[in-house]
Length: 320
Image 1 (cartoon, rainbow, N blue to C red):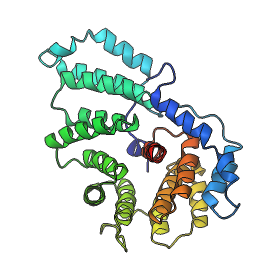
Image 2: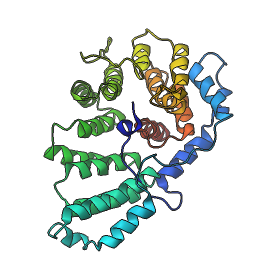
Image 3: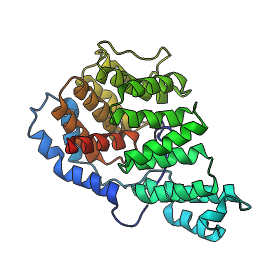
Image 4: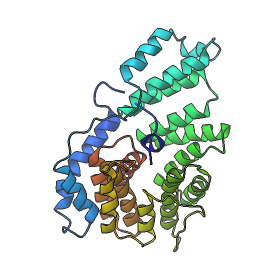
C-alpha cells in the first residue's frame, strides 16, 4: 500500500522522548543477535531475513517521510499569532489556527514525540472542539505513546461525533485488539474490512479481522467477502489461510525494492514480522511471537501502524 495510505500523522523533535526511548530499550534488549542465537537457522525464515538485512542496513531517519517539517510548522504557528486556547474556538480564523496546531502535532508525531504531539492536538481541539479528525489524531498518538486509557477516551468521543468513520473505527479496533476485547475487535475490524474503499488498505483490516477471530477462539476464521488486492499484502492473507509458507513470504518481501513495488523491503518485512508474530501468538507460541515483534521494532519504521502495535504487545508482555 502507498505509504501515505498506511500511515498517518506526525510528532516532536528535539531530544529522545518517552516513546522513542521505549523503542530503543526494546531494540537493545531484544536485538536480532539475541533472538538469532535462540532459533535454528532456516526454521523461521523471516527472523533469518531480518538478521541478514540488519548486517547491511543503513541508519534510518527516525521520522515519517512526507510529514511536516517541525521547524517550519512551529514558525507558521508562531507567525499566525494564534489566540490563547481558551479564546481560540470563538476567534475569527479558529479553523485555520486549529490546522496550524495540528501541523505541529503531525511534525512532532512523525519524529516519535507522541506526548508532545498529543499536546498540540489538544490545542487544535481547543480551537475546533467538535473535530472528529483531531480527536482521532489524538487517540492515535496516545496509543503510540502507550496511554491506552487516554486513547480509548479520545476515540470514544470521536466516534460519538462520526460513528461511521472507517479511520476512527480502525483506531478503536487496534485498541480493542491490544486490550484483548475480542468481540469488539472482531466487530470493528469486520466493519473496516468491508467498508474501506481502498482495496489494499482494506486487506490489512482483513488480516486483523482474521487474527482477532483466531485469538477469540474461532476455529475457522474468515475474511470479509470482497475482492482482494492482487499484490502486497495479499501474500500475508494467503499465509494465514495456509496457502503460503513463511519461507514463501520472503520473495514478495524482497520484491518491495524493485521498481514496481509500492513499499520497500524493510516496510514489507516490518508488516510480515508483526502479522506472522501475531499468528504465532494465536497458535499459542507467545515467546516466538515476542521475538518477531522484537525483530520488527529493530527495523525502526516508527511511522507504520504495525510498529506501534508491536511495541504495545511487547509492553503488555513485559507487564505480564
